[in-house]
Image (tube, rainbow, N blue to C red; front, side):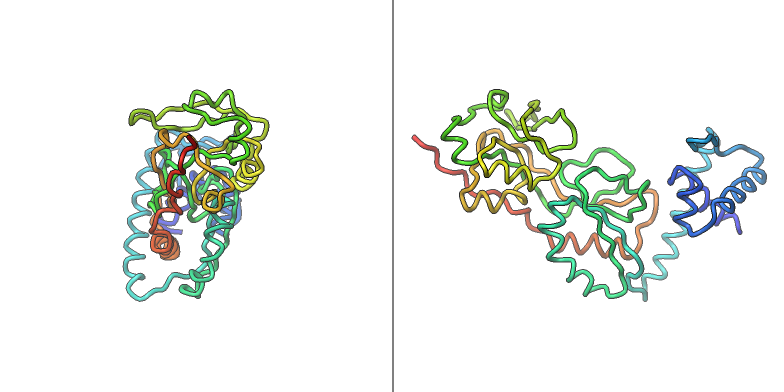
Length: 306
């Protein structure tokens, strides 16, 4: 192996967090990867990795080498892909992670078009409502909803996304309408999230306002929460791409319209430390062109009862 390949091995090992995962992703044996990295350390005359039975982490000089090697590998990949792109079509396996409800409601109908446009791409789509570790779990790209946190991922905005607070007309008739976000603790709420402690975001005088929410039912799937709200179990806050149909046909109505949260987005994300493949680029562009319009904005604010 040459020095560039040793750099690739080292970068992949650090990204994966273990020899075993790096070997699996590269199609090599664990013993081979370990042997090559020991030879790299011997050639450089420094220790790059601290190995224990449970963890693998870089030394101080190893972190420096990782950052420099990542840049070198990135640049070489970029040069090769720029040349190959002149005559190449996207091809190979593309592994994508996306939220469950967005995947079933919006990705599922358009995936056939993507595969028809790129016949040499094999798509592996995993739908999950938890926050997936794209790098650690071996995904090429993912779809993220909401506000992107600071991370090593590159995010490309696909579409605008609006959150609305809503409930069924039957619930309003039974419990009355909250006038302010601060009234919600006195109401039955239906949190959508992954944790017991859920906060909803509202806009108050141009600034975000967080309100802690509790309820008898909390689910990490938007369709479950939407159906519970339609059944009159309480108030929920969900993206319009989940509740749009229910709002349009009257099963749900919006509340706290004066405090709607800021518009966020739908994003295609991919690891920022490596050059995206042609297939990833094709998927990101397909998402952008397909979902360029806002994700089913909520209907006009309903007329208030006198």
